[in-house]
Length: 70
Image (cartoon, rainbow, N blue to C red):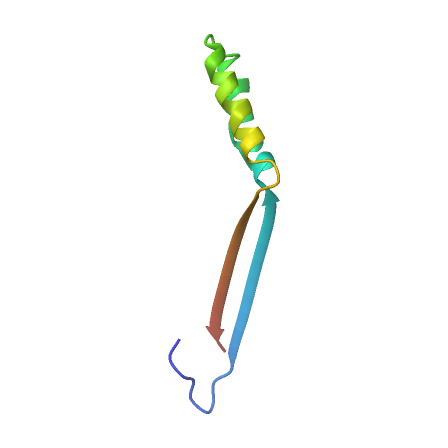
């Protein structure tokens, strides 16, 4: 943001959402599996299980920072 003039007030706002990576993958993949039914190929379930196991302990972080002039 460019510097403010003497009559302006700057306001900052931020938001951070942290989620376990395994939960994020489950929330993303589970509705697809429920809509399409169980896959015919067991490799699909094996890949999904491997993704969940690999993501154990990991985190997904969404951050948003906004600035405004009032």
